[in-house]
Structures are given as C-alpha cells and as structure tokens.
Length: 460
Image 1 (tube, rainbow, N blue to C red):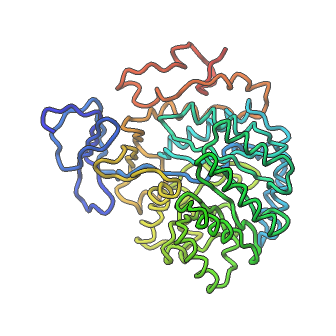
Image 2 (cartoon, one colour):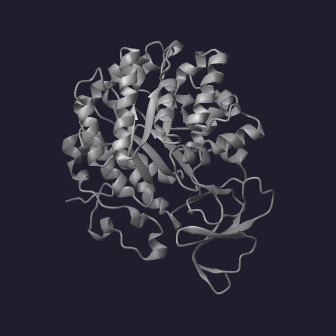
Image 3 (cartoon, rainbow, N blue to C red):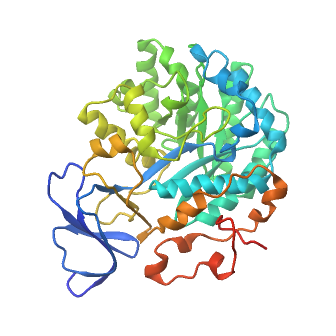
C-alpha cells in the first residue's frame, strides 16, 4: 500500500469483538482494501473514528414507505384495532387503514418518502426494502413515487421497491393486473399478504400468483404472513413450501408471522425445519404490535431472523425514525434479550442478518467487501444500543455521506396536499450528497439555483 493514494481512510476505529485495539480501515474504488493498525497511506478523505465503534451499515428489510407520515391524515381507528389485545381485529385494521389510499397521489407521497429515506441515511441505514401498496384504491401511485425516490437516492441509500398486494389478490378484483403493471414499471420485489384472503384455498392462489410473477421477472418475494392473533393461520408454511417446491430458496422473505406466538412447540419445530430447508428468513417488528414471532426459538433453530422498522407515523404505529439501532433497543426489551451475547445478536439482526435476508452480497466489514460503513460515537454494541444515536459518520459505496444535506432533507415539511407538493415530482439525484466537498461533485439541485424547502427537488 506504500505510495498508494486511497479514496478514504478511517483511523482509530474500534471493531466489534476487537477488544481495546484501534485500527485503520482503508477504502479504494468503493471497497475495503485493508484493515490494520497504523496503515501508512495517504487518502483523499480521512475520518477519525476517535475510538468509536465502526461496523457495516444498518439494513431495514421492512418499511411501508408509501404510508410514512399519513397518520395525521386519518383517525386512529386502525391503530386501535391493530394494537388491540390479542390482535383479533388485525384484518379490520387493514380495512380501516385502506381509507387513506383513496387520496394516494405521488405528488405528496414523494416528499414523505424522501424524508424517510434521508432519515435512513442519517441513521446509517443504507439499504431499505420498501413496500408500496398496489390495489384498486392505491392504484400505482405508491409504486411510481417509490421508484422515483429509489432513483433519486441511488448511490446513497439503496432502496428495493416491493409491489405489495396489501388488500389481497383474490378478494381484490384487478389487483393481479396492477401487480403485473407494477413489475413492468420497475418494482424490484413481489409482495404478498395471503393470510387476509377469505379461505385457505384463496391464500394458496395468492401465494402461487406471487411466485409466478416473481419467476417471470426473476425477482425476490416478500410476504406479510399470519399477522393476527389466530393460531390457525398457516400461510408461513404455505409460502415456505412453495419456495422449496419452486427452487426459490433464499429468495422468499417472511415478515411479521405474529400468529407464531400462539403456535404449539411441536408444530413450530416442524415449521422451522421447513424454513431451514427452504432458506426462508424471517423479519420481526415486535415494537409495532402486541404479538410477535418467536425470535429466540427461531434463532435457536438456526433460522436467519432480522428486525425491521415496519412503519413511520402511519395507521399502525405513531413513531419511527428509520433508526435500526432504536428498533434493536426496543426489541431488547420486548424480546427480553438483554445479555451481552443477546445484544450482539440484536446488532447482527440490524446489519448482517437483514443483508442476508434481502440478498445483499458480502455486506460485512472485511477486506474485499463493499464499503458501506457507520462510525458511531460509542465504543461498543452495548453503548450503541443504550443511546441509539445517529452515527458520527456514514460511508456509502466508499464515500462519505453529507449528513448535513440529509438532515435538511429529513427536516422538510411532510407532504399531504397534491397542490402544495406537485413540484416535488421534479426529481434530481442526491448522489452528490456523498462526499460532495471531498470529491468536487456538483450537486444538480444547488447548481440549478433551487431554494426554499431543502427537499432536493427543483423549485420550478
């Protein structure tokens, strides 16, 4: 490395399970090229981690991005139904929440989604699997908005857009055609929710349609499964069996699975064997509902389990900052995972485990891996979870993220009126927010003379 000029050098970094030793992390061409003490090399940009923990970046595998900040636009009836004791009214909650979709318009969804993705960047979440409802009410407005935001943030936060049949496929006439159109538009993942169909036979048809569509587009599948307090729900088994039958192992991701809390242990063991064989990962969001998947049991059975944000101020949950450390902090209490080893597992469930679940390649802090990193202000995982503060520095694809710019985008007003936010459809890339000063990149928004809302959109 002598004589070589690096793109980025992170000095005085503390690694997980690395004791008190401080190391340097060298980055070139977007990848980690060396890790060691006192690396003698010059770099175009340097970060002093000051003894803080440096790790791979966070991953959010489950966010309803088309719904963020819509709670002020509706009553709290859906919230009360979803979070009621035993989750016996979860289906009613979905029906109540769907009322907002009559107002869906990409013009106000875009600024809301932009705020949420900027918050992700601020909190070191550089990969998000984002759901957009597709049905007769939402039409394709959410998909169009999330595709636009995905393209806007490309190279800073990588967004996988899920075309999501939120209100069903069999019970929602025309949803199948809209799902086809959503994938043709450029959605990345096929999303389903078979448990809300009226019969088990219809649930199987729902699952089969999603896998057929995924096969036609060579896409992954994400499904919200058994998301109610009903021990008889078995759509997780349906999905895993279909993934195994079709050879879609590792490409089918199960979300929620809350009915699992009520399953008898012998059935859960049998189900776990199927999940292992089909290589199905499970996303749990224990903070957004009173029931949750049996995370400890799944981990003990060798299932890849991860955490998701799920919601940000929508019909199902009033809070959320796209902060996976905060999600892990809440999970530590809700799952009673408070021992040191538990906390390390929770950190994994916000970084490497969701990366595996959404099929990121080599997402880890290691030589040769892509440099998607966070430098925290705390020295270890326990302290990082205690404070769940934003990272001091975020590195995306080997370049430093302009956190001041992300902060300005995140502080922009929420959009809930098409008239007020129509201009926000004039999108530009925010990739210049990465290492702007160090790299001499020209920000197309600033160069255009746009002023005012700091949203990253042209004012004309």
